[in-house]
Image 1 (tube, rainbow, N blue to C red):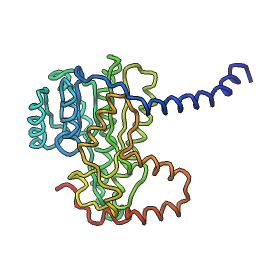
Image 2: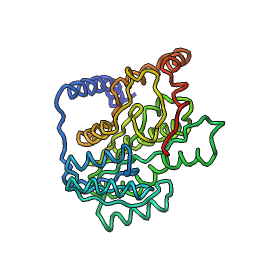
Image 3: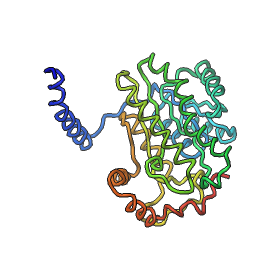
Image 4: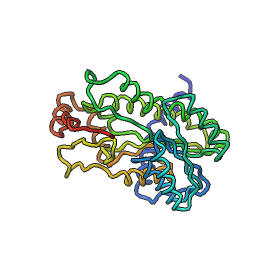
Length: 302
């Protein structure tokens, strides 16, 4: 073993401790927030739910332009009109992110009509809300194509230009269900787990790319139309998040270049417990929390 290799082994734990202490200190200090006045933000699934609140929050924080993608023109138009009231230039385009050719085509249109996208927010998602054996095959495929593959196509469409400009940010609105799945939403949990792996790999791959960052947001159950009917056993202890709260925290994470956001912060404990607790104990936690039955009253988006 040469001296260089030996020194790397010796200093490795010192580096780890240093970065842990550095992160701990930064938690106590006020973070420096970058301005958004020159940013062009594109939000998929931007017509309603969290996407609509994200558009509003980016506009409030001074984004130069906001672009909405979605499949329902009525919702996109209403949100676009709402954003325009903030004095922010807003555009909308009909686009199904599950359709690769359509994504690439609309991305070209966006560049020609609006300009280069500097912040991409992958928010579009669907949930079928049934067990595996009760699920329709086409619905299962739809969840994977929108929730997972859609990120591949949108990121491939806009990331190259961000790398050229050495300026950009890729955001993913994920879910805590990617790390703690529940019965009755097997399509959603699987697609979000794949989406999280995508973002983890992308974040590491961009470490040596100056000016380009990533943010992955993992919220608990959020009170939106998409999860209408879902019931938490102890809502006083685990109240559903407000979509505007998720939007505010997401935009703030972009401004502070935060890589991962768990909402609420107690979800960190869930991830840690899952890493070492035996399966039997985890099953008891699920039974106690009511996650086995929380999707029994699920209705979803009408």
